[in-house]
Length: 294
Image 1 (cartoon, rainbow, N blue to C red):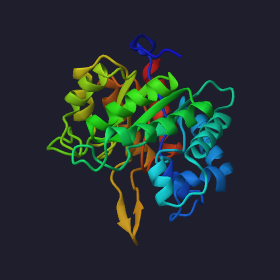
Image 2 (image 1 turned 90 degrees about the vertical axis):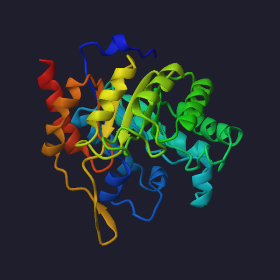
Image 3 (image 1 turned 60 degrees about the vertical axis):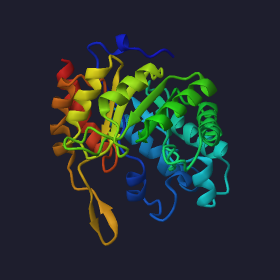
Image 4 (image 1 turned 30 degrees about the vertical axis):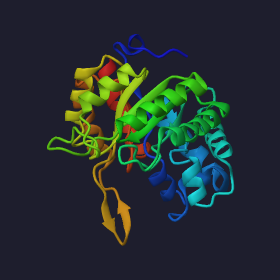
């Protein structure tokens, strides 16, 4: 599959919403690693994917965000990296069925920082390669690198995933710092990130998670000013409240969707949600997109 800007001229596609928060709401234990639900609660994972498809999403991410070797070993998961990622992609493929939605294999950051020498590129390369290959084997149509904050790490993940699979790559970073929330946690500016990812060969460039849909517009504007690649935007549903040690997301589907027109005006091509958003949020987003396309 070839993804380019021409595909999205005059067209906006809808992506899915959050996964770990939604799986917990559906009965996956809060103390369990969300990705292990691919084996312990496969019906729940599959049904959530189907709910997103029914809500209007045309990109369904896999439940594999943290399924890398280091995290699986630390959490003492018995399945291998390949097994967890392959199963996550298979469940997403089953959820999509023949409806035309695409499966986006999710890969998150390693949790270690290159800039302070917590790890090296030589150590990270097999980490991302294993995950990408497992997702491709399970039937992913593309790979989405999500919630990265370090440019060097996402550029490495981009190269490794592309070399390992040949699939299109979405490179999405989280912007939650600076006066207008246009910098990553590592201090990288959104426009600099977009330029680097464009040069690095990302097929789609994006922003996800961060400070929520109320605060993401300046970062989106900065990304668009620096690249002509399609933009992928999946913000959180507001900011969580900590209640009895548990994150609770209050933003309603209507409140979330009310912010979507401004993002579409900023030339977003693919719009969905991240933490705190669910099928009801995505259904409202799809309604906004449908009205705008008439």
